Length: 224
Image 1 (cartoon, rainbow, N blue to C red):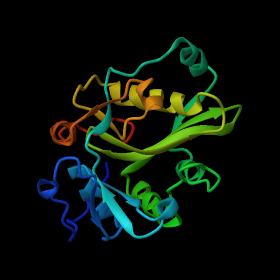
Image 2: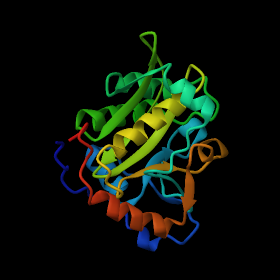
Image 3: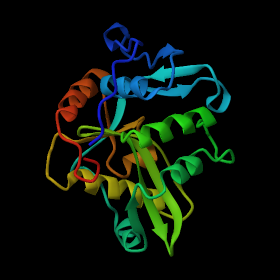
Image 4: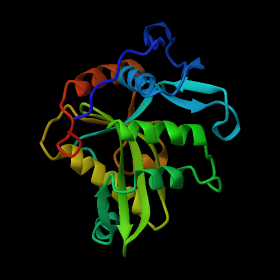
């Protein structure tokens, strides 16, 4: 089981952030302790420059996109796709992050500094990947941060149809294995695409309450 890092010197007090304000701060660092603290209060980093460039911003969306355990939607076509892929956990973490950071992607925001930070989180035991493999080739996946019963998704990619969706279903099933209803998947912002998979949105204050409950749950067995 990973060991919680020492306290960070940075202040992530969301009580001072007005409703609807999503950019809550600029600066700080991407040390494991800083990232850990941010996720436990409902914040995450993303550069505010072009394609995620500096300066580093800290975000807390209002409303917040979430996927509750038990709410995942699997269409008939997606159910057929599930049998095509081999879902693996943490076998190619850095490959997944680098695929998500591909500079050819529209809306890219993952910089080399972000890659380095989350590889560090993975080495510390707090960041994980769910991967979709087909015929021995990595064709999709997602990565994020797991603390207690929270999984905070950061990004996903696919190089084969439905591969990222299969990874998300795989993540949901991993979190649902022990039947603990406190677990929560945070997707940051709801999109129409994610909504088809069961993602909804809640006000930030409601999210913070759900987060507090999720953090009381134990890590899933796969990561404990």
